[in-house]
Image 1 (cartoon, rainbow, N blue to C red):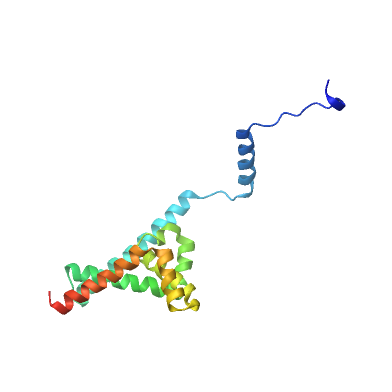
Image 2: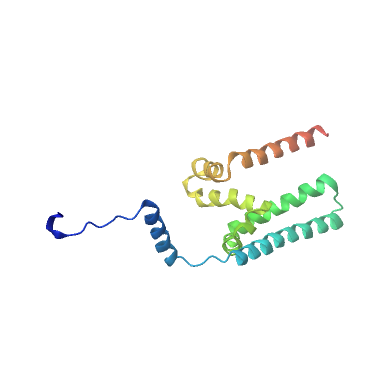
Length: 160
């Protein structure tokens, strides 16, 4: 005989609890517009690549660059533009609108290096600016840029 005449309530299974919780959370979340997000990312990423192609054509015609010199110059200009737009706060707005479309091109990598450097510059040059570049962008990117610049200078001064 049950104590107090009350019937024991059956507990829902663990899987049912998880499903109830997920349904509850989904009721508050706005539906994701996957196609719209992919289209915006494609358009912005493609736009950045079109700007890069425009820079390539202009450097090819005006500066008469070709081959590796042209590729390096275009990369340098795009990295500079990415850092400049990050410093002006424009790249963050582009990233909010485009999502992954602004991260993938070379300008996204420039943004990932410049953003933490600007954010933590008040902590000092070494502990703030330099150290935070390594934390977010990763040592591979920073060391790769530094090593590439060092090798380029060595080749330049040796006349190779």
